[in-house]
Image 1 (cartoon, chains in turn blue, yellow):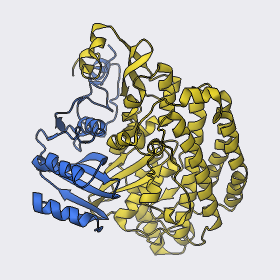
Image 2 (cartoon, rainbow over the protein chains, first blue to last red; image 1 turned 90 degrees about the horizontal axis):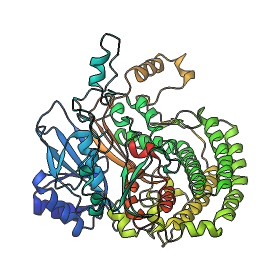
Image 3 (cartoon, rainbow over the protein chains, first blue to last red; image 1 turned 45 degrees about the vertical axis):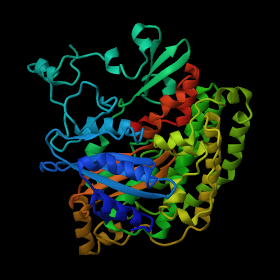
Image 4 (cartoon, one colour; image 1 turned 135 degrees about the vertical axis):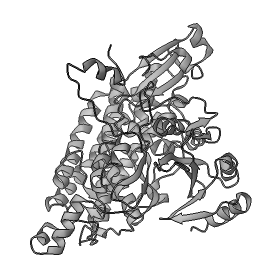
Length: 170
Length: 409
């Protein structure tokens, strides 16, 4: 572990009771959803993690609790160190508070995670779909979502298949 | 299945001003089929006369589900899709992917392969910057620059074709090294390019840098401060033009970038013109790196010797039973990657590109996430475009250097 990160993870351990672990050169903290805002605030204000480098999620379906891991990659430009936060979430109506107030770019990242995984962000200012069409149903990056092929359309089932299409022509 | 529904003003209520509801200001749709939005970017502009009050970017028209598709493919096959993300920086995408896989496997790459990787990614940076220069000048009505840029870009694409057989979708870097060594003509081709290219950069600059029309259209347009850049996670030339010397190649060197001597160009103005100057200087620095890579190109193998990951050379297959088995296993099953996750970053021509990769121990990735610079940088577009003319929005989009394949994935 980098020397700069050690005091940070120790302080976090004392205050939040979260153990850091390292894999492939990346230090990560696995935390509870309730701790998220206060922990990120501490990291941002006290330890100068001023940039949200990436935000994404992983689906561990068919496991149910936890089914998702929400992943935040924080980066500190003055100290040049990175830290990963992982938040395990249940499969049933997963939701988290938004980080939009702390990092402005969380806006689109959270829209993408909502679009792709169906994880809701409470307090988000504009939680619309971003990559899929706005009236799309389902969340494509979930593991139980099929990879998807077009249904074959013949004369006898033309109308039926047309109804199932995301954008029915008429 | 709900009926086909149209987006109403209610959906965008918190994104536009109250005056849009009463009809005092005008909502104008720009794109997705607009030549100056560089692909399929759609902007919803709220206009007061010709002044932009709000700008709402709408992306996703080029969404191809690459991340989902990668989960269904082995590590070798999934790499082919990375070329299609940022189609102006295919080798950079390959590099990010390979670095992530190599990190998970703890695989070492021979020095020759690393030098060739650096050389080719810098050529890709030039390729991308040339297209950016041509098209963004074209948007500001400087037509001839586009033609000159395309002329030089052609030479770079020919070099890619020489190495990999493909001009754009190369997939030349593989986990553990390269697909094969570069051909003998490669060195001369790069030398020929290096001989003419620095003069050509001066030529482009003589067309634009002191051009009054160009300066009027770009100075004090689309300003953004370094603090706002950090707040929005904006990186790359935009951040450097705002005065912060942040370059992943320097702060977290990868693939042996620490051995090369180059500068990070910065400006402090943070406007479109500053971004133009930063990118022009970056091209010169890339030429420096290519020169150094070519001079001290080490000899030796270009692929790791780990036969569990890297397929054996063709010549061995005929004489060694073990090599044949490895070949067969690798191309049918793929290679297993130990359980774990990693996040690596590289400097793409547009900014910091990150790859989050997680493996469940099988031959297919559990999750690959590309954190792409265009996606992040586009988010700051409303900030830059506010209170400018519609015509300036075109210049600002050009200066962000959007590649929608990169944003939509």
